[in-house]
Length: 221
Length: 214
Image 1: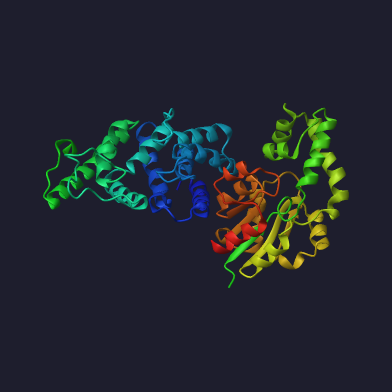
Image 2: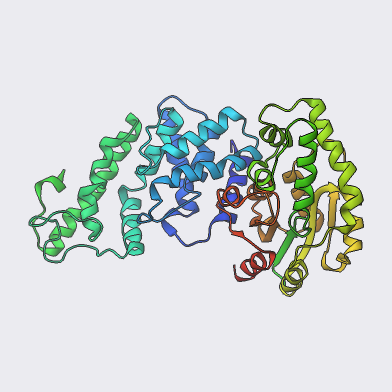
């Protein structure tokens, strides 16, 4: 497999660093992001695979909870932490800068636009992780960590109340998840995101049926 | 059953030699026309390669003859003083604490002969299954040395911890799967160590406790 030594080194670094406290950002998340980012980049013309692979494994190195006050700086801190690792792995300065830019720009919270194909592919790949069957599993895992409720039993789809995704996980679908496809940076990422958003819509429709509640028009897509 | 192996760094970690190292550097820089370098500045600017570290302290790119002067000043002043340097205050406690649950070895990039002398001087030999300093020529990275160290020990790097005092220690260990505990007793300041994402401690005893509880 191409880059097998690089991947082995990054897996070793990841596992040495990971304290197993966050199963939605475990090594399987890093592997999926790497595969999706490589697929997206290949569909968009290529990109530097070494940069994409390293950025995928290191993008959440400093992983702060979503309600942490320094959350917006997590990707910047991850990029800083990545530099000595990348140097140790033999990345030259240009590759280090490219990987660090991708790491910084991958995050919603950082508010930094990705400027390279590698950075765009990484951001799209990471956002895909919030969609589809994986996204469903991760959404409820993260809401469990944050102590959120699954949904409002009286008004599950916020027909007669403001959306509140800090309190109700299902509200997060409308607040953020179903809007992700339009934020994708690449056409390949957009295609994949549209398919995976349909999984969420089907889930909401099934949930509405089980609850005997009406699903608002917007959530049907 | 000892499932862990702990690899110790020497300078700035087990050996309390930051003060003299900083002083030698400050004196040599003063001779090059850059007086007033403080220990805090040393910790703030320390990095590898050393040419970048010295350039940062000088405030400009260090010339080859200046780098040679700094290297010679270190050799001239450190060697005569090294037998008078103390161990870190809790070094023996940390070594003893870890000995109950881990095998331990020492890996340093300082000359092997110097390390051997100091280990014997401090009576530490019985704590370590292997003591390795730098023996070759050229400038191998700490990562290469650490990889060989694990091979010589015949231990899986993923079962190892490295206790060190620099970002370089972290960068050497991470791609090998060696977990790192960093201490603020040596060459690098807390902020730089924290930026690695590795756990950072103010004492060897705290680092040892973390490893035992991990």
